Length: 93
Image (cartoon, rainbow, N blue to C red; front, side, top):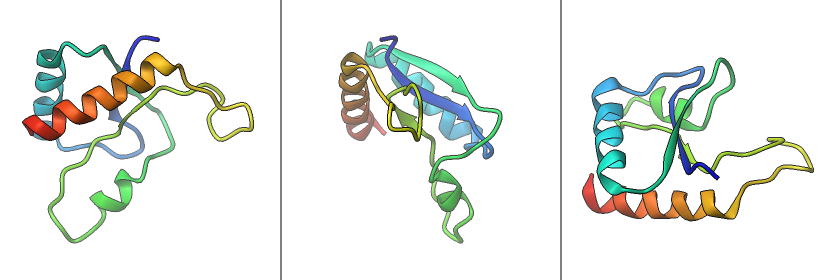
């Protein structure tokens, strides 16, 4: 219920200049968000980062409880914030 998650890093690290731009836009958006730092694991961003193409990436999504289990769950307000953030970023990046 605290908003969409913007991940500062997992096993991989987004390019700082791109991450800084995302955080600036997130702050300007007025949409609730929270920051995440994972010590392990990774998102599909790893595949993008390891590709031969210069594509920036960052994990942005709804925070989850009990990830990858039959009891996985998210709060609807966080899903709404995620959709709002995606829309805002697509218009402003």
